[in-house]
Image (cartoon, rainbow, N blue to C red; front, side, top):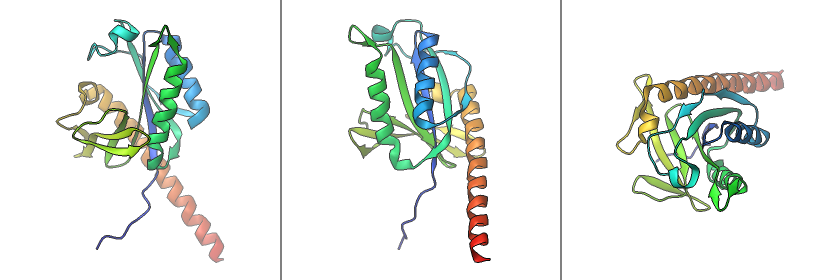
Length: 188
């Protein structure tokens, strides 16, 4: 019999895509006001893996990845996706989004993205949001899966995600150390 356990908190990260650098930066600032200090921000990348967004957002798209210092409960991902969708909707012109925000989280074993679209490998979280298991961590690297988006499979992106994972593991160790010290102090 398995015994239910409280999961460890997760490291929230986002991908922000837009035709406008200032839109990306402003969006990251707004997200930081909600989710805590940014502790990683990638350089700007060309986003040219798909033309999915080009009709709505333009042909030349840029992207940044970022993560936040505050850890989140894993079950908060659906609510966060709903909030980022609302932020996208606030940034529209003539019914077209000017920014795309994709939140996700990572834990030691995996990386999960939030999506409003169902698919065979996605698990429903609630609030119209699904969890997309995008990468698993094995053999000291993130391993793409059959359905992993090509940009998340790129070595450069996986390298950044590994750097975010290292920050996360340090945060967990500090958190566990603080919890242990607090328990030890109470015993005295």
